[in-house]
Length: 416
Image (cartoon, rainbow, N blue to C red; front, side, top):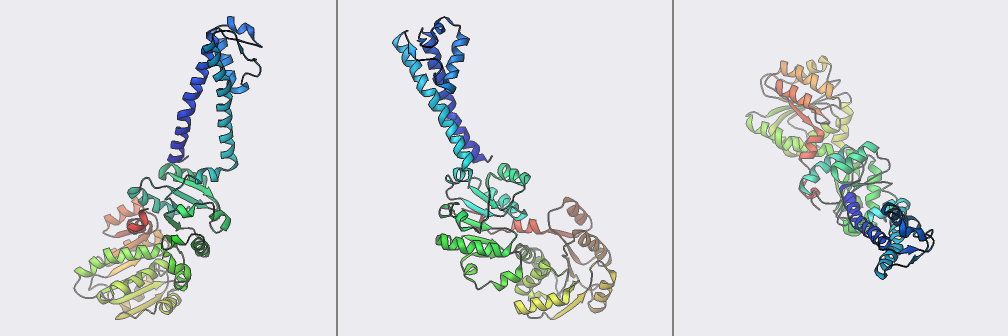
């Protein structure tokens, strides 16, 4: 149960419990003043525990098995009659509310949402976003939607981030109409399926046009994102890729500082040319081309991927570019690089950015021993205290994609 759900529950219990106690005391007081019951005339001489038992029974049977109040003082009969009517009404209202919540839980929770943030997806990126959101907007309501959510993760989202959780398909038009999108301040589509993200955004824009530029889509495929750049959805929404966000932060902060303090133009080695390596190359082309003499690219499928990047981005070559195809863990590939690029008479930047944190860290230690003047960067996905401590010990920079994304989310994404 989220914090908001508990607050609402406390509000309901806040008036129900006192009301129940008052109704019980009214009935008990009536019986204690000498009022009798038509079907239980012996109640007059009963002890207080027996009268308390019959007073509690009014919440269940409403006095149907006891008959009606007779005899005794007028005030006593009046109090008992109030208990006769009030107790079953209170019990019935509680039961009806519980039944409504059971039959229609989504509607019950959603109709209270206002100026809320809708997030589709329950992966690591959603958790990263929520950590930063709660630093700046602790009270904004959050609704998380996914086709399937791990129960442990659902509990974490509810308890740690005060989020509402709903299982459903964000691309279904009927489901979208139930999310009170006209009251939402932002929609973040952070799921794993690129096409579904664009599809959902298209339907949301048609349903709620005022959400234009308030829909943020994460696209895992940079190639697909570039292909869709001129689409209606891309023009009306904010599209981003987590690797691009991380690469932009790395280049603008750490690498730019290194370039500024080195006199000759730099040598940069990108070891691992997957999504992160490609986005680093793109950011270097955009923001640091004049500072770089030589770019060297190493990767198992480097030649084909370089051709694809060149075709899509129309990247102009740096002063010099070397492409070597091979595994970064194999010493032979570094021997080939050494024969083409001098890494000893400068302060080169070597970025190990394969998808294997183990290979990146191990190779970075080996390279630091061979080229102590080099700025060596080892990439991991999630933050790792172990990797940070080892990197600090050997004067290597360890960067986490998740951490870079978290620290560089645009501020306007974090405000309602």
